[in-house]
Length: 171
Image 1 (cartoon, rainbow, N blue to C red):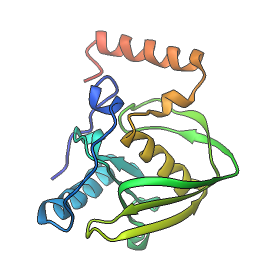
Image 2: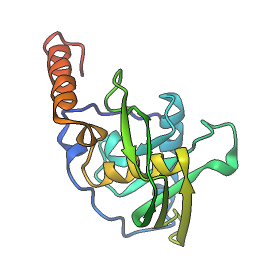
Image 3: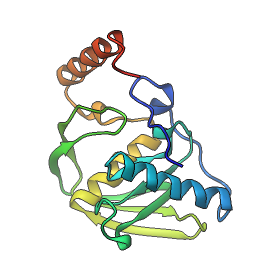
């Protein structure tokens, strides 16, 4: 099933998602598969459950955009436990289509989480994967990439979105 991606303005995007407590269920495995399908259909490299309207601490990431099965990452109840260095790079968001801005992030992160089977996983990542982990973990905490921009840039984007919404082009 391909889900509709909710857009900026939906309260689920700015609310901390609930921890997942049940693992290794057919429903959870199906949700993970559907989230990968949705992410690929929308040409993203990451997707968090709140972006499909579900307040659950689940995210899927694939920096290969479906080209390399070994690059698929599933993080449930993730917690970034180590940060190192800095990088600045362009980010966009499936929930804020049409807007891309440079965002300062940590270059290298270590994240602890669970996979769909409920097993503990720890992953250290750099570069784009590190950026994606931080971006998606922010989603689970109710934080959007807009929050990392200057107040001026953030307000400019919000005004443009309000204008699009008023014209019926932001649903």
